[in-house]
Image 1: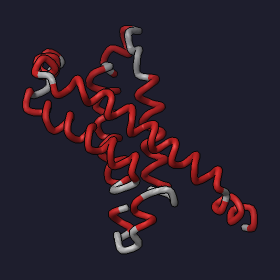
Image 2: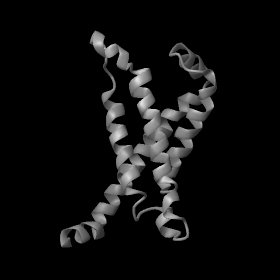
Image 3: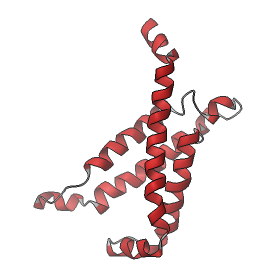
Image 4: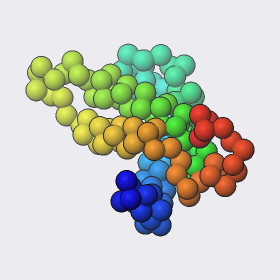
Length: 141
């Protein structure tokens, strides 16, 4: 129990926790930029997804990235990103291609999914706006 308390009070833990959140947030912001282009809508349709998903996905990734970096709504954002990543792994990368030996390119998405699940479990951490504003309910953190 003592080591757990020491670990939780470690400043390097806080900085690392924020670094993981900020990295995932920056990656999603960077990848969201191209999704605002109407050409990406055609790409969605070519992959069997409705064109109407363009703006919700682009906005979720852009705003969610900002939320993760700042530490606001981190658990909710982590859950939304997890859904997006599961869609990327199974629909875009193609689990159906696994039998044919063509199931590749999912590794990055899997690592991102693991990081998002970690964010859901650990929450925003102490280096976050949520921690600075104590009035935000825990379930919204």
